Each structure stands twice: as C-alpha cells, then as structure tokens.
Length: 475
Image 1 (cartoon, rainbow, N blue to C red):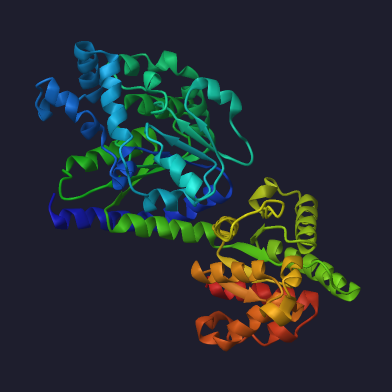
Image 2: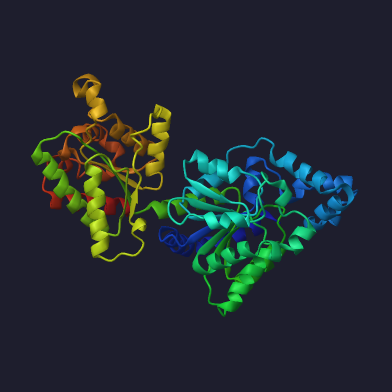
C-alpha cells in the first residue's frame, strides 16, 4: 500500500472520530461496553503473531508460508504427525518467553471495562491488570462461568483457553470445528453480551468464523437492529486495497464500524478516548479525625452542597472515603441518587476505601492512590488532617497536616488532573492552596478563582464556584 493511500484511509476515519468518541465513551461510562483483544495487541510486547507462533510447525512440516493460510489446519497437520503433546510444547515455549509491558493494553484497561474478551492464550492482560491494581476474574473454561463477577471485578473471558492449561486450548482444526459443541456456554455468554453491550475490537483479524458467526446470528435474530460495534483496523505499508472491501463487509453484514489506525494514530486515539471517559469524573480527597464541632458542621454542610452541585451538573464522583469526610460525601451522594431514582448508581459514585488496616509500604500506598484516581479528570482537596501525621509531630515538625492527602495532590499533578484546593477548609487543603497560588501560572484555570477558594465559607456559593471551575476547564 502506498503512503498516500494509507493517509487517505486514516483521513476517512478522522471524519468518524467525533461520533465514535462521543458514543463509545458514553457506553463505557454507562457500563455498557466490552473490549475484545486479539493477538495484534500482544505483538507490541514481543509475543508472536498466530502465524509466528506456528512457524516452527510450518518449517518441520516442510510447508511454504503460502501453503499455511489456514493455521488451524497447520496445527492439525503437526498434531497428526508429531502428537498433541509436541504441538502444545511448541506453543508453550514461545508464549512463556519474556515479553515487555504493553502501553496500549495499559491505556485500554484504564478505561474501566467490566468485560474483556480475548482469543489470546498468554497472560499479558492479567499482568497489566495486576500492575494497574485492578481486580479481575479470569474465565478460562466453561466451569469458570459460574464464578463471574457482577460488581467489583473485571471479567476476563479467554475464549480459546489459557497457556496454564495447554491441554484445553483451542489450537487445531478439530478444536475449531468442534468449538460450537465444546464451548457452547462461552458462545451463549458472548452472544448475550453482543446484544447488551457495544464492543470495541482491537488487534483482531476477523478471520475466525466462530466470532463472525456469533455476530451474524445476533444480527439475524434482531433483524439487523443490534448494537453498533467498533473495531480498530491497523494498516501499514504491507496492507493491500482488499482491506476496504473487508471493512465494508464488516459494516454491512456484522454492524461493525471500523476505524483505520497506524502506529502513530492508535496511541493518540486511545488517549482521546481516555480523556472523553474521564471528562466529568471528579476525585474528592480529604479527611479529618479531631476538629472543633463547628468545623465538623462545616464539613457536613459543604459535603451536601458540593455533592448536590456536582451531580446536578452530571459529574461523577470518586472517593477514597477519607475518615469522617468520606462518610458525608458517600452518604449524601447515595441519598441524592436514591431520591433522583438514578439507575446504575455506581456510574455516579465510585467508592474505593483506602486500606488503613494494612501495613503498606510507601510504594504500595502510592500505587493504591494512583488506582483510586486513575480514571478521574479533576481532583478537589478539602480539609486533610491525619492522625498518623499528628503522631509524627504534626505541622510544627512535618509542615503537613496529612501526608496522604499531600501525596494525592502530587499524584494529581503527575497525571495532569485539574486541581481545585479548597483553602477555606483549612489543614492540608490550605497547604496545597498556598502551593498552587505560589505557582498559579501552572494552574491557569484558577487564576480568577484562587483567592475566593480561600475566603469563601458559604457551602452553597463555594460549591457553585467549584463547579464553575470544572465547567470552564472542560471548555
């Protein structure tokens, strides 16, 4: 493919980009989106493609590459000639080789999909989930389907099996031909999700008839009115013009809207999707343990006013449930959502309590705090008084009232969140306010509001100011 033709396809996709970002981000926020990853994504970490995986088999069988178009048959021929154990050993050796971290998978998993489907045997997705401290439930066979999580974990469906169980991976033509019978429950779950969710396919070639049959049958049963799905189609100088016919076929017969990407545009597109998903999600940082009654009353009334103002403006709230303050935030948020009869309240309120009962290292604390705010665009800092910091000498010895809240401020800086320090609440929030004011050029969106964040103590007016800052930053 010529460079000009490649650029033409990329330009075509750009005209569809705004619709994709708006529609698919809304599906993710509503927890109505699923991710489907193929081997094309794992290759970025040095793992072999499906063809590369079976290259030793092709060579030993004396086949030429052009004879190896159907790789299930290649695997079958090898098993027929050298036994199933020998075939599994070849696959096992290559997949268990060292491979690198994968920034594309990291960025995709940060989008908070509740379901991830893959045809890959390797454990790369699991390793990235663990690195991001995202709890997951691996479903590698039909027995695991009885243990799927509906709330607090990502379900990772490995529909072709897992390298930890090489005897049961789908690899040969026999495995492929009998899939409908040996994995009927997997297919039932996949069809159900194709009906209820919008899928994003990435790194997948659509050469596997099993998946296409699922898409086709759901389209047929729904008389062509099923969900519109999306796919990132990777193109480079090796891509042929035939790709346009394939993309057209996917759109017309399977209801999949394809977006062409290359090595330069793919990371940017995922970054834009991340920004869109995070756009109106706010992290609230703060806690206190020993304050005067009037300060506790201020925290109570401010929490109610702020939660109401945020949710009235269609923002979503994330909180680590800091001591005392977290009770007010979550309590008023749940009360609001119940009164408004909001469906799917976890869409609007993410509660991620910090594990104070555990003896965590400083690195583990930082990792956990990163997890708490990783899907947020903004961070609001209020109060911030820690018993642990007080025991270590308090402000006079440490220049801080809460090291934990300050660490969350540093992480918010690091990850480019919009930072709003409510200095009028005092304690660590005031310390952060002073630092922000001293470096106000870095916080251009606060230039006209920084002083009032320190002087205003009326909860209603203060909440309106905070929301106005968030709305202005969005623009």
